[in-house]
Amino acid sequence: DQRFLDTYWSRFEGKYFAGDGAKKDEDGDIWLLGRVDDVMLVSGHNISTTEVESALVSHPSVAEAAVVGANDETTGQAIVAFVILRGTATASDELV
Image 1 (tube, rainbow, N blue to C red):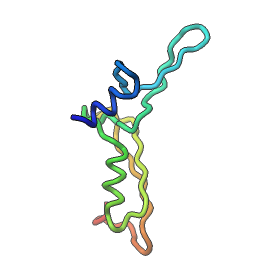
Image 2 (cartoon, rainbow, N blue to C red):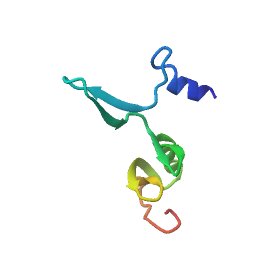
Image 3 (cartoon, one colour):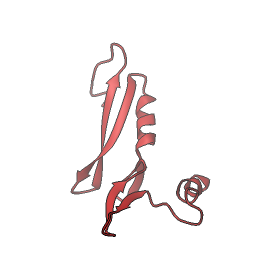
Image 4 (cartoon, rainbow, N blue to C red):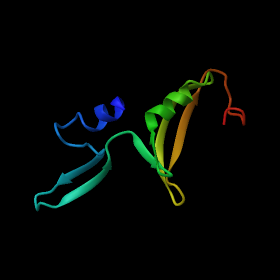
């Protein structure tokens, strides 16, 4: 789809941007730095942290949300979310 083309093929003319960062040191060695975009690989699925955060803040009790990846032996990465509740909202099983 167009979003895929815009995200991965438009940054560098004629080159595919995989989303992984790297740097070359003074000896010519290349060091992988990890992901530079907001995509996590969870159980073989690319999950956007931005999309998860948007879904969380769409809940009327959630004011702000931040999502990060954590290592997981089973899935590779797991989604970890941090939320700030709105006003008088309290954490409950219904919200979780």
